[in-house]
Image 1 (cartoon, rainbow, N blue to C red):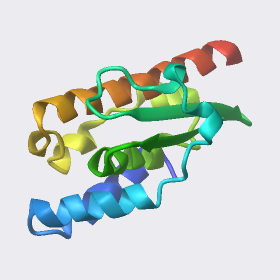
Image 2 (cartoon, helix red, strand yellow; image 1 turned 90 degrees about the vertical axis):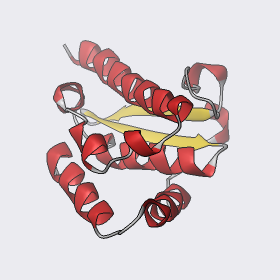
Image 3 (cartoon, rainbow, N blue to C red; image 1 turned 135 degrees about the vertical axis):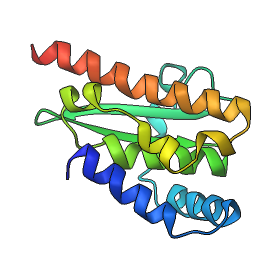
Length: 140
């Protein structure tokens, strides 16, 4: 699936819920299904700067596509990173770099997060895009 198709699927899933408590519960469930980062990658280098909670993201290039794994010490944050990993893992660096993240606004996520969590979300996206830029540079 393309990034756009995955984003549309996520928007559809979130639209099934009537209120934000249900959406938070869904995000927590998504976080529980996150393929976790190996302990050896839970290092300072892989911590997302600007997040209130600890969030680790690791990226590896496999056949011209980036595979991401992640974890967080907070359940809501784990759900947020799970959404991003689902969207961007298994995609080509160029597609990640070009992708917009308007789907975050479409599901209303940013407006329902505390300011510190919203900043953390921006930092997570920024880090994923930085990994993509680094791997794209290696490909060229």
